[in-house]
Every structure is written in C-alpha cells, then in structure tokens.
Length: 33
Image (tube, rainbow, N blue to C red; front, side, top):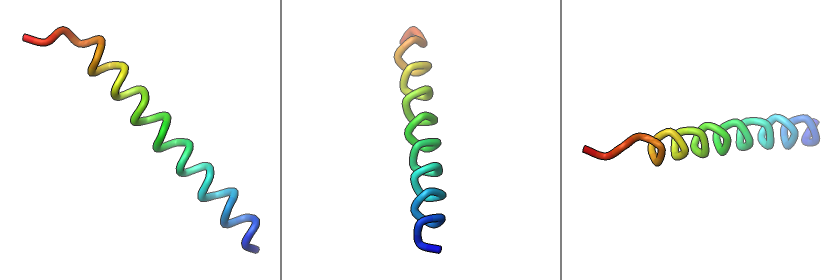
C-alpha cells in the first residue's frame, strides 16, 4: 500500500514540476511591456 502512495505522490510532484517549468518557460518567452 505505501508503495502505491509513493508512486502516486511522485506522479503528482512530477506533474506540478512540469506545470511550473512550462509556466516559467511561457513567462520568460512572453515579452515584458
């Protein structure tokens, strides 16, 4: 059971990291006014 929880937690953490990375890439690529 703990193994599944760790796997799920790693998946959520990876998704959040990917979301933050993509958001940062878009923010950096967007020209500042």
